[in-house]
Length: 400
Image (cartoon, rainbow, N blue to C red):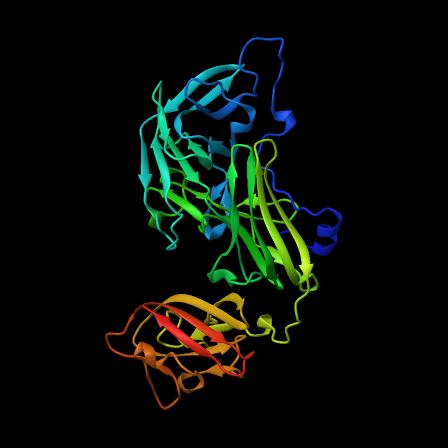
């Protein structure tokens, strides 16, 4: 993962960190003196009755693999295009002529995976031939075509956001950018975004992916469909779909104006300009890596004897308004547990160390101060740990 270095210098000198998704000049074949469709060989989305244009090309993109990694998928192509409401096809161009075209009726898919009202998308189970599919609403779309499953996915891009431990909402909430896009281009932006040391990503419609696997429990094999990315990571100089988290250095902390821009010619770009300073933080989340451990957890109580037993690490979700947050979703069973930091017992939180929260879940306490999961209380819980006074006290919530 490339580091996000010298952001201030980059913003002042260049005022931009650019992620390109459109065709480059080398991809386009233009020869006005010859007959045919003057674009490069490949796949395009084209309006009914119109020739495809270079800015509507679909190019190869990776899909998700195990462990949040990326993998190649044969024939899988994507692109960002502004589509006016109307009928469309996916067309394949070879030697400046239409070699094949694909379409079918479109189906609206309701997929509210994160409780966001911008998650739904359109699915087309395409067939070769003259059939078209309808785009009901004009807008900027991420268009994908997967020849293995014959699927076309149309995601109406209605919002962009930053998310991560470097952002105000941490990994638990998007820092949304506002704006709009039309056929000529447009942007989403936010001012005075407080960026702190940590990591972040950019994502669209407050979602990470669109899961088109046949059986989500069966993994990421090529014969089980695919999971396409709706997030960007990697590095500031080379953002890629599904890329690794982008580091943000402590020396670059400050207030920023963050903007995502799209134009038909240049595709997507991301800029961040530093506009102010922020007060230094004395509390260091890296020195407070909280975990849950105990016989109520899948791994049981830790031991120093081989084989080592791991704690269940909480994810650091960032700081919002001075409140630091960590969270985990875990299956709990009848038994006891505590929180401990940094895989050691010198910083421990039991039932009586938490200002509030354990009793709200109906959990009990034993003589050792362990939080006790009683009979009938087993199940999957999302556990969130908070401190609003830089570690002097902590609270916790449990959502079953």
